[in-house]
Image (tube, rainbow, N blue to C red; front, side, top):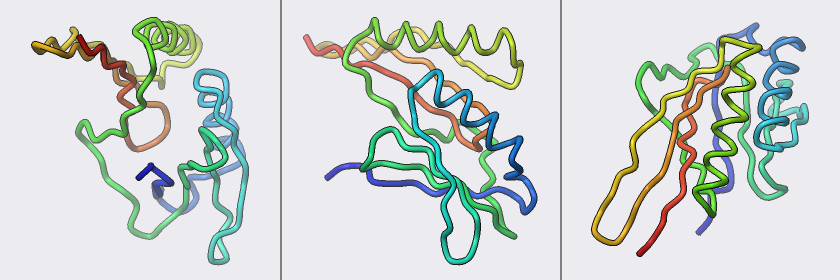
Length: 136
């Protein structure tokens, strides 16, 4: 089983062209995701695509998602170095746009596993948990 898609909803009127462009600039430059507009059930929506078979659908709704806590989607990287590179890219982006929220964590060390991670949130109503899992 693989992750296929997730839908995140916003209040009506949020997904303006400028808002979409800001989302595309961050997720495209930091994570390399492709972004396209698409129509779903008569509504102009926005897709963020990590690859052709996975996407996050951004749509507007009269009842948008509320996520005031640490709700997140995990993004597994192959190595600690990849996590660190993405963290640095997020920090560089935050230097020019203070809407980037980053939470850094100490490694979670278990007997046979070390999880190296940080959380990042930018204009989407959830965090992304960017992590690597080093098995011993």
